[in-house]
Amino acid sequence: MINNRKKPELLIPASSLEVLKTAVAFGADAVYIGGEAFGLRAKAKNFSNEDMALGIQFAHSHGVKVYVTANILAHNEDLLGAEEYFREIKEMHPDALIISDPGMFMIAKEICPEIEIHISTQANNTNYKTYQFWEKMGATRVVSARELSLAEIKEIREHISPEMEIESFIHGAMCISYSGRCLLSNYFTGRDANKGECTHPCRWKYSIVEETRPGEYMPVYENERGTYIFNSKDLCMIEYIPEVLEAGINSLKIEGRMKTALYVATVARTYRKAIDDYLISEEVYRANMEWYKSEIAKCTYRQFTTGFYFGKPDDTTQIYDSNTYINEYIYLGMVNEIDENGRIITEQRNKFSVGDEIEIMKPDGRNVPTKVLEMQDEEGVGMESAPHPKQKLILRLDQPASEFDILRVKK
Image (cartoon, rainbow, N blue to C red):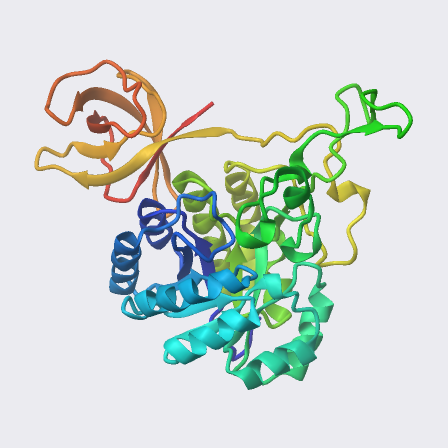
């Protein structure tokens, strides 16, 4: 067990205000979000200043912390804008800033010294001296590099102060470059991965071209479908919560600031239960393992690996025959409110129809099968199906639902 250490934090990503609310409802202790600049997910929807302020207020009203990413590797032309950005964020009172660049760190310390700073995994934090350095500089948490084993993280914990927090990824996409420092995106497309514009060339299919035979593309075969030589499986540590906590990790981080509300709800709910079960007893945790594994497989993923945590990855951690995700469920929408007649108000995300058998996914772990009995648009006009994305709908189901429940359908 975790002895007298502080209860571990479950840290969930959010790409929008809707996803932030989902993360809070489905068990996050903290969420991390990006603004419209200075984060490493430039292609994500991200938060406008207005939504960021609303999101922080909503999370705080539910006892959940919010960390804002500003983890680009800045160039000279970024610095003045960063100063103004931190002044704006200062007024919103987030709980921490996630930073990798020492220059950005200095600006943040000068403009908003009252806000904690967490050092991003992008800073390649691989040894305890690095943690000691950042603590002396005033950081309160360091995110471990994905390339560390649990044994290495445990050794780091033994060499740093109890007050210094360790945050580590436990679920989500892995990068074939060292903690996100990918050159392929910039080389192929001119989009700099270290400034938030990664095009994920690690997921592309490759062929070989011989120097004296330009234009002749020779396939590299693992099987008849070709090969995806940089395509890693996704990290999943749901079966190893005891080992993660015994290593001294304070914050268990989920990757995925470009993911849907359904993904966030599924992963947050599953890890929330696994952590809470383990805090009751290891026996309770082990007894519910099949539920965790079956639920985590319902979110979008690329097959699973334990990454570097138990040693260096080998060929079994790569996927050579496909770059496609496994996706068993389709996200239909979130329950935004229940009207006076018990009907659901939602914003549709994928097409469904009256008469469809769908599922209500609840934060408490239940998955309730239900049938769509009636559908109207926001003007009250009856409809048979909802073909338009983000259309506001009024639904009557044959089972009760609550605000923040997720509507999904099995493929």
